[in-house]
Length: 396
Image (cartoon, rainbow, N blue to C red; front, side, top):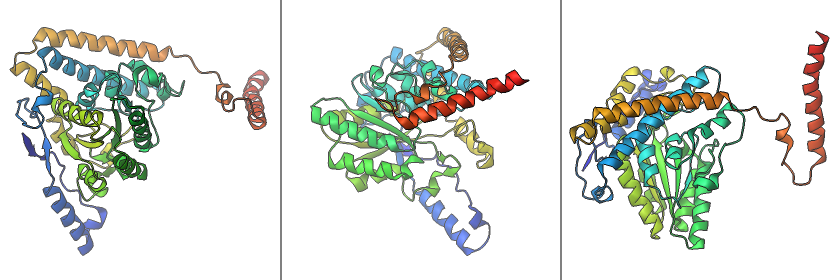
């Protein structure tokens, strides 16, 4: 079943639209675009009701109650980890944090669709995908604490290090996928990015290369409605998934708060890639419930009623309703998961606070294989700078 994208936010009146003919026309055009928003793939309604979809039902037809409980567990524990990381940043234990609150279904559904030999290129918010790939969540925090440059070996889980530069991972993924194809492997590559990154030239270049070389890559765009403080309607005049048509490969919009739909659509796209049918663009239509990062204040650019409307579509509550209605989970399951969630939070706190500080001079290592005079000079300058603090303390 496909349903209208009724989750689209109400048109926002720009500053120019407060007065004058130009502002009125701009608002009218935006309204017209939004009223024509396309349908999206949905298998679970916000009320937790299972709906049929002839095209994608087959990709989740064999899912068991145990697997459904596993998806629920994944989302709950990912949200708990994310909440703990946010609290740690507020307490001064992390320098910054990018929350995934509200996007759990998009990440868990797509992450669980991958195989072990697939390769994942994330942004800096794919904590749920990292969980699915077996990356210890505490390893995600080292970079945000400033004690390392990543915290895990990408080749151990086929999960690349977080990418801070907006959109560049789409090109990395495409190049890697082209290599996979040349090697003759039947694995696939998936690249994650947001609606804001879709405005970057790197993403368009990646689309073009992937299409021309028929690369086995899936572009997974989490459209959470806001590129920091800019709404999607100020970035594009067409739905994001339709951009794929201009490059010559299919695009599909899925309900990003429906974990089953995200699982099914991503399985379909990855299967296309593995069988030589080329790239696919998936637009997971979801919502960023929290701030862009902990340095952001979303109350300055969006309204509480918008968030409230999306809270009714909460991905975790949606699956819980389905599990309860179908008698796939009882109170004992939910109580046990709550205890596991608290234990995870405790472990995250303990591990983060025990992370050792890096060597002050490690930054100068491994820049050049055989050393370099300029690096040596800079190391000496830094050593003198560090020593000046000890001299000052001694003087006091």
